[in-house]
Image 1 (cartoon, rainbow, N blue to C red):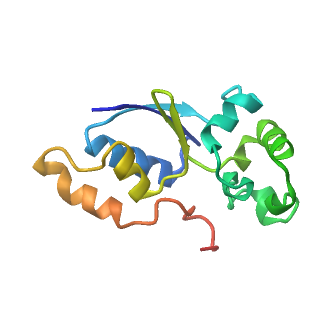
Image 2: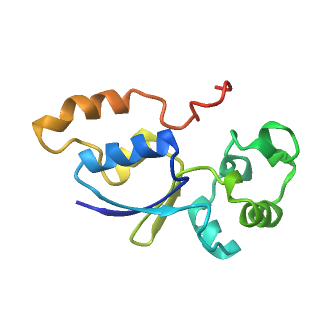
Length: 144
């Protein structure tokens, strides 16, 4: 079992499904509110590592969808500052296990990192159903 600090938007359907998938794999999930966390640029940067700035953003965020924020036009420092000012821009979830931090919920990456095999027969059917769902794209948006 792994303890995961899971930064989410409370009430987000996919974050709830993601936590369930982690829990059925036997992990302890400590949920934190991404929107009320006190972020600093260095702390937030830990979750993004070497991935491109454009992949840091929640593509369903109103400011991104409206074109007010264009991730492709931002440098690292500007992106981090915008996210501190408006945490809805941050791609979810942010997860931390020990010193390692990650952004997003890519099933294969998480499987390799901490494992997602279900614990116990009772959770296998639910676990299989969750793994085949799109757990990254907000179900409240029409974009892919």
